[in-house]
Image (cartoon, rainbow, N blue to C red; front, side, top):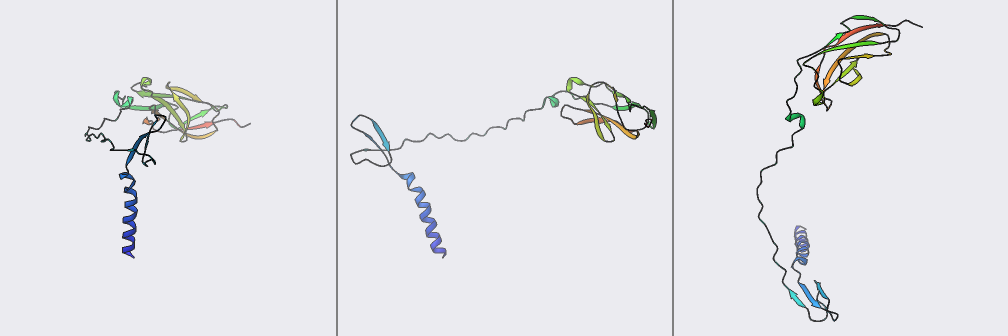
Length: 175
């Protein structure tokens, strides 16, 4: 069985190489048209030698440096602190409309030229995003205990610095 398989494989390989060795023919018909073919016509045709193929040796090249992100080439602002200074930790807020005013302290100042912005989170969910001012307010917040935090993010949305959490207790009158 192995012998039959080897013979069949050899014949199959040979069948692929035969067309590569086929001759080329050129002839001119009665109207003066030049024709090229791999099969000769009934009349006399000139057998052609295929032209030599141009080949170039491969050249080793040094790899191109990866394009750098604009952010990587600029000096990245390093923030040393971000704090929520208002409301204070464990503050009790009374607002029937559910408003919470927030004031942040950021050192150094926010670098908006590099696309940095502020995000405010309430109970782990972003409630105010792409802010450039260190003061903002939230409205129509449900009564109860909430945890506030803030982050400075770059233009890709990566947090560069995050404040510590501040717990607040919001009281609203029942209707």
